[in-house]
Length: 282
Ligand SMILES: Cc1cc2nc3c(=O)[nH]c(=O)nc-3n(C[C@H](O)[C@H](O)[C@H](O)COP(=O)(O)OP(=O)(O)OC[C@H]3O[C@@H](n4cnc5c(N)ncnc54)[C@H](O)[C@@H]3O)c2cc1C
Ligand code: FES
Image (cartoon, rainbow, N blue to C red; front, side, top):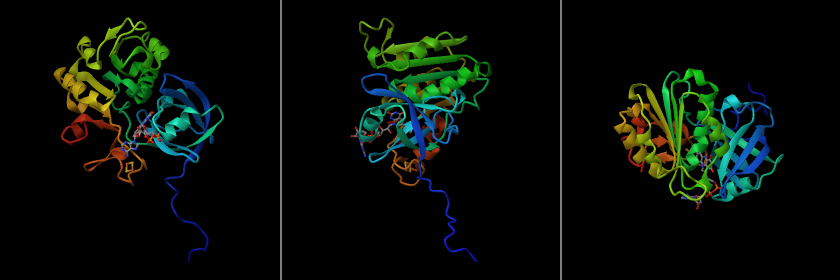
């Protein structure tokens, strides 16, 4: 017989853990960098490409990608674009403020499975934010991968994210790093044009290359066509799809595309798994 009053229910999947803000730095007019640490002192336990639900007391919750690699210690970093209630409140955070964190959730970039391969990263705009976690992971384990190629596109020079870190990446051995801005200005003497401008500038071995892409929805179909012309197989193209999410754990259906729950089966997908799913890449 059960003891009355003994709770045998499962832990509440919606219960956040507390985390403390370590650092806040504005990056652009719209994006702010925030570093957190769980109050339990445990590592977040994420893999590159996963996201968490961040809750701000009295305001709400939003899914946000973890932008730093698990290989960089127990704290974890995010970049938040100010678009609505939760992100606005996150922009107002200060060091030592506390937030709730649920997760990490979702499928990650396959950084373990692709060891030994050449890796081509294609990042458009804020798409660099989740991919940065994978780039850092690969660079922290540099000898376990082949050539690294990083292509980054932004609208204009003032929208560039992590520019100092990108300058550090340029110094890494056996690496190609190319950047472009859609519209050149006085602060940018580099390449001008959309991200696909950069793809013909890299030579890949399609038999040994994995492409990891993330950016605004419009970017995907054009980038995929180029990658296919470069003879990279659909099964070797991984992309992170952002969909409107609420629960993050496969319960509410907000993120659904046809039969796919993006919060659980994604946000990272192999292109060969979604190429025939209408709406996946619109
Ligand atoms: C897996 C994943 C990872 C993400 N990673 C990041 C990240 O790293 N950084 C980041 O800044 N953002 C990220 N986002 C996006 C972020 O979760 C959203 O922008 C979120 O809506 C912000 O919450 P908010 O309360 O600030 O804004 P909201 O109040 O949700 O509003 C955001 C914008 O969406 C519009 N909107 C709101 N509800 C709807 C609706 N039902 N239909 C259509 N439009 C609507 C609003 O008008 C507004 O323009 C991620 C999203 C996902 C799914
Ligand atoms: S966000 Fe609720 S089911 Fe995916």
